[in-house]
Length: 137
Image (cartoon, rainbow, N blue to C red):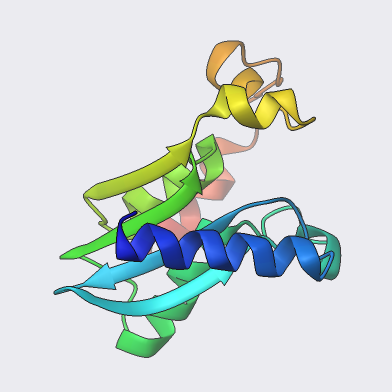
């Protein structure tokens, strides 16, 4: 097993054993060294954004004192959800290694696959002119 994925799996077990959240762990690596490790903490924090990847990105950013994680890679025990993929892209991480698929997550009660299929959200543009004012500062 890859040594970084091994650490991600250990984090996933840690989170599950402590009832922090789902079976998800992530590790951010730069230049062959682990910057951060994290697991899902959605249940612990009552925060739907407390996914392993988000938590690992936050820790790595804090450690490096930058939001730009260019040159980093992320190892995660499951294919990142749409939210986590967005965070990975915003952090400028170019390589993602994952273990389980979103279909595997669906089989144990998660709904990751639905986010890749059909968007059932209503997205309505309102008050654009007023909302653009802070863009002009």
